[in-house]
Amino acid sequence: MSTIGILGGGQLARMLALAAVPLGARVVALDPSASACAGSVAQVLQADYDDQEALARFAEQIDVATFDFENVPAASAALLAGQRPVFPAPEALATSQDRLSEKSLFTEVGLATPTFATIDSLDALHQALEHTGLPAVLKTRRLGYDGKGQARLHRRADASTAWQALGSGRVPLILEAFVPFQRELSVIAVRGRDGDFRTWPLTRNWHDHGILALSVAPAEVSATLAEQAIGHARAIAERLDYVGVFALELFEHDGRLLGNEMAPRVHNSGHWTIEGAATSQFENHLRAVLGLPLGDTRLVEPCAMLNFIGQMPSRNKALAIPGLHWHDYGKRARPGRKLGHATVRAPDPARLQQRLAQAAQGLDHPAHAILAQSPAG
Ligand code: AMP
Image 1 (cartoon, protein in one colour):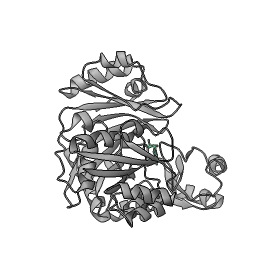
Image 2: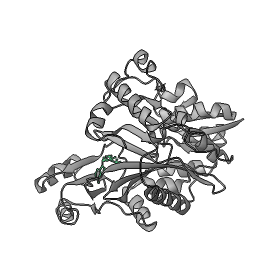
Image 3: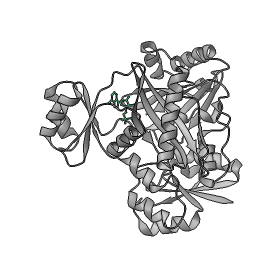
Image 4: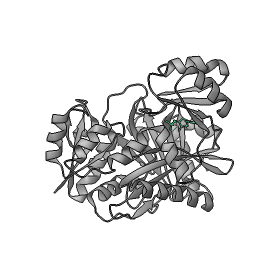
């Protein structure tokens, strides 16, 4: 039986572990937390990501290593790579850990990005605002997720507050023009060890306070835009010699695609593939890292995925909604924490809209307000 080691033991590791069972594989996760939620379905080795002795013990138990969390220290990924195959490779991980190298990669493969500038002083921030205009978003180059490590600037006078909020230059920063996008889209893609490359149908995403709240697949975009998005994902995967699943997050603005960021792992906007695609992102990630043939990524039925942040709704109410699939990660509730999700499936887009509206309203989910402002489609 193959054993896959996962750095990180959160809900992504948990869903990977569940997908490993029918493949005849098992998962061991390494996580600093004593209550990592993968622990109820997989073995978890509790240790810090830079604990060298624990990493060596971890390596002995596994055949191949991967990640559910991209902010693992590069040195730990490299140490592991000295003992076991690691996918994606530490170099690919390093590129996506820094917003600057990520944007440089996008530019190299011909994917436009929001106007940006690196910032190392308050003066530089003032100057860069000339370049990006207002509004703008100041972000930490590293370790940002779910809207953390970001400050929006609406007026020039916001510069010093934003500068202080992000550590007054103690960590590298990047300033981006705020894009008044029409839609946020993501490509979930997978590349095998043999270079086989596949994508799932494009997903449309809505965020609430910087955290993904709702995804709908397939996104209703033109065939040309979808081809462009997939072409960019393929070029990135090939440039990085990438192995495994990744997500490419895009803004659609005035008919053009702009690259926001990539996540070198299975992604929240691909959770719908568990019930909505012939092969889920979790199964295909495992197939890729194990060197197995990739599975069919075809859509089974249109899907909407609702994230449960901070609190879970009533399971009884949710399960009464036709076509709804329930995922409770078994985590303790805390504001802003991803606790679970539901995927609503329907035979056609019109019925999906009905079921989604019913779920959003019945479960008192933020998607209700989001859809009132910007209907799916
Ligand atoms: P990020 O961590 O960069 O993915 O940012 C989280 C969310 O903030 C994105 O999904 C967008 O909704 C929003 N956001 C980030 N950067 C920008 C930008 N340059 N323009 C407009 N919205 C942005």
